[in-house]
Image 1 (cartoon, rainbow, N blue to C red):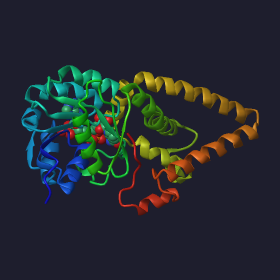
Image 2: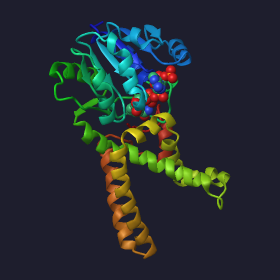
Image 3: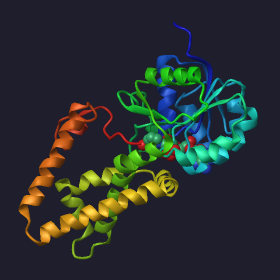
Image 4: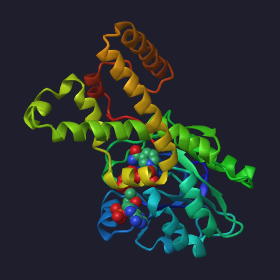
Length: 313
Ligand code: NAP
């Protein structure tokens, strides 16, 4: 067997993303030793039952000691507190990264705690499902998905290359961009769609003229597609909304303007405008399929794939 990429990897947080990483690290033999830490005894016990690592602890400091790569996979609102906790135990020369869905806020929270000599490289794999916890993860999650790095001005190119190699071996394609651009891009491709989904499902849940059982019964007409996004982890998405506030508010303002224009077209019977928009949006769907970011099967076709669920940040 070839040499592992890192002698020791520590995973702090072992939910959907952390446990998917653990599984692919094992499969690809990327670590000589894989240390797992999580906040609660219950999650740690489950990770151990699933055999996700080589060592298990609720003490994050202990997990990161001597690690060459430390990956923080916790809700973005907790990343500062985790960085503060592990900072004194980080090894000089280690790479510290995260997987958080927002980048500006994570950098602001974590960077002040990073000791000199530790390479902090913020990252975000654009891969996920609506499930959470260590049972939800799977090794193929990152395959053919993008992992975006938002390196800091003084990031060591050798450390960045080593981390890129790690993610490539997890199956991902790599991109780099500045944190503000990441947060604006993700606001439209991920955060807004989730907020729209939470909103429409909330609206349906509040309706009085249509019963809940009718909404469920006839959901395959379109509503069902929103419920997958709206079933996403409440803690994670509360934190995303609070920690990418400016970009999300800007996208919501544009969205509301466009919605008002659509509303006017419907009210005035402007069929041409509706037809033009719906034609344009159909082409976007085609481009996504051509880029290999979804399959060209009807919605129910998803059940045929081994790990149903979409990719998101
Ligand atoms: P998850 O399945 O809910 O797992 C969360 C993990 O973080 C658990 O180990 C949990 O520990 C730990 N945790 C929760 N609150 C904590 C706190 N206050 N302090 C320390 N640890 C805490 O979450 P996930 O889906 O893997 O998401 C993890 C990160 O990945 C988030 O930053 C999210 O933005 C990002 N991300 C998610 C997706 C996605 O689709 N889910 C995609 C890309 C990136 P216990 O269970 O022991 O409490």
